[in-house]
Length: 209
Ligand code: FES
Ligand code: FES
Image 1: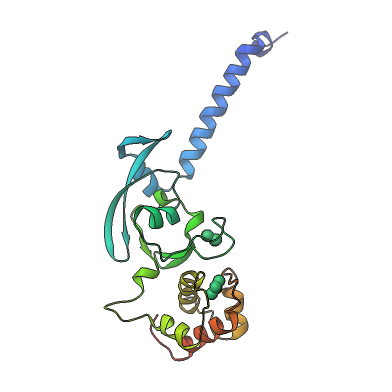
Image 2 (image 1 turned 60 degrees about the horizontal axis):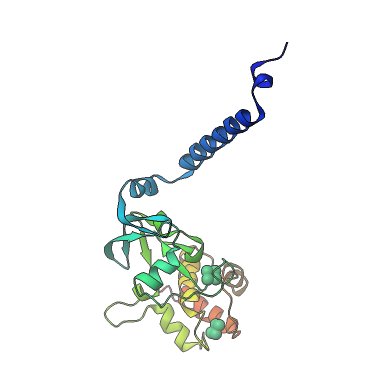
């Protein structure tokens, strides 16, 4: 005996299948979205951007609380550079390969080109601009100067943010360890040996990072 599905017309059953797939994808997508993002998404801003609606989020950047409307497709890197004028952070590959865009999010190093801005709702972001205080450079910045840890300087903001994280994470006890845990940060000028020396010195002297 034929069942209901075999009696349905091919068009109708294709429609049902499409509807089912759409529902499943929507539900699966929602369950994967962090709570902070959902909260942010519940407060859409007025204006559409292309096909997207801007979303309001609040986050702390270099110690200052900010409330911003963003296109949900925007990377954190673009938000920082293009919207907030924090151009110390660099766009190298925009593809997670070079480390030039490294920032700290809640104290952890993160590639900002691979991170959606809207996902940072409620978080603390630190960029290279947030390292010095009252005109006083960060100890690792001082060490980079002392050891010639840069030439053109394009990779340097990312190297510094990763170097600080490397020391905090406890991976700066030997040149091999530093090289391993800094391997995500590329330097086309080849300043690697001097960068390693700078990081090792700050760790050895027990300077607060
Ligand atoms: S710009 Fe983000 S890793 Fe290269
Ligand atoms: S100092 Fe030029 S790319 Fe690193």
